[in-house]
Length: 164
Image (cartoon, rainbow, N blue to C red):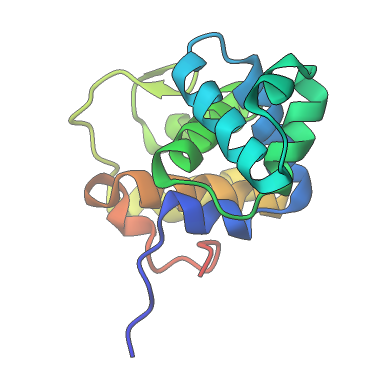
């Protein structure tokens, strides 16, 4: 039997409660996520049996707690939460990893869309961030890279840090 494909929603489900809460806070604070925030409010309202208008009237902290409590999110919403979380909470780690790989970036965002990591540098780059950041954050970051772009980050697939 083959292992199921790791998707953003499956990754969301495997995140720690703290990671989901931090991702949800980053999501609600993202000024460019308006449409996704409406979708999240509708999802929360459906699960909690609240009116969507009531969810939208809550402060970001309460909405974040409700979103983080949902273990199942649509793929696009989970993907958005993961990206916003890393851009908000993990830029330093992203930059360190990309520096170790020798990939040009601007604050953790790769400048060349066609850039691919040298397979020989992946192990040392992972070791560099493992020594500086919490294991669950390293694992989530590496797994997110693999999940979002398996063609570019396929070299991460066999690493023990990748969530199964």
